[in-house]
Image (cartoon, rainbow, N blue to C red; front, side):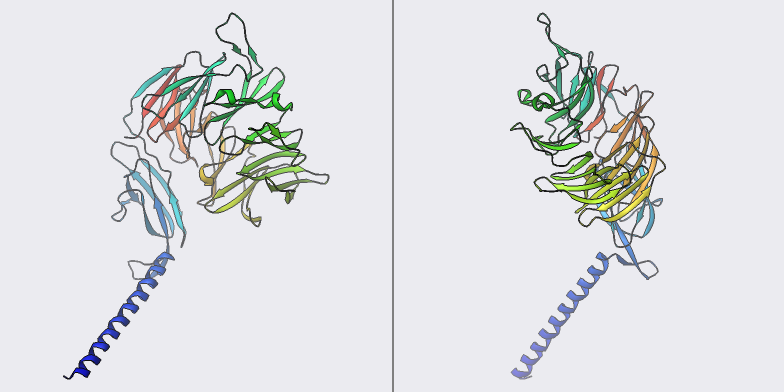
Length: 465
């Protein structure tokens, strides 16, 4: 074979090889796009569109069982897998732990996240951390890493829980509340106000107290790290506030309703703004975005504004007052309106209705859950939970009206001294501990410790190794 023929043959081989490589890349990309779009070939060699399940747990490494069969492709949690559309029952088990189970509805081409399952050690031992003798009330931070222990004196305690040996430091509140009696001969003053409500800021460094002294309501912002920077808001501004909320991470900015007028309070400068909106009934915020209900001369309405805007926007009119929330789920923001038994969810950007539900009862309270994934509403022990991930609402009953959040995704109730936990939607009810006080908070810290109060003692149980 001459040289020219050899060159032509090599050139032809190169062209064919490159063509095969390009074709392989095209086929690979097409297959990946096919899979990402949720399409799959089943055991009958039929093309069907599927969804994806993403599941994690505390502790990690739980065995996953799907529809009654151990999965060969998903043996442990903290992974993802394509599933056929429709309902599937997911069960998690782990040696030495209890089990967790839920039926989920997988949608074609969509991702379903299960990030909140928690398993508890079966064999747990209680240990006493400290005596709370004389403590009349307590409040736990939103991250469940700290508590403030209150009593009838002006010497309270701030307790850090996120340590092997929880540390306590004194918290002198004598200067900040009006309901304080200071006798010259007494080692401490007496705290005589009634605590109505307590809220922590997002950094868990400030606590907003609403208290009643005689016939008067008073609002006090306590700085737990620097108590000398605490402020009695009622005294400072001379207003009888109806409602105050912390709207930033450091409690430097507050929103307050006074005689129907919505004001912004700048805490560091001790300044209060002119009225931002008049005749406000209630409000909610997401960072600097505010949604509210108010009344004008013609009707009730829902409005929206950002702090710094010149004028609020009227979103819709209402026949009656309503409760409102603003939240973010994934990358979308939503406005939720509750009118009596009617729940409506709107996309914030264009205020188009996203979903609506009719409840069997009229909730008195409504709040956004962790990362905007769910919204809970309740009257007493009757709860309705809107699961934004599943697009479903479920009504259920807690075992007692003494319920709260034990972590970001689980509710607990105390009934006849028994501490009972549920997922945010009421599923996976489990009884954990006995002889638990219903008048003190309980919480899970570091995904490891369960804290609660029993017989005037602060107790701790190891729930995860």
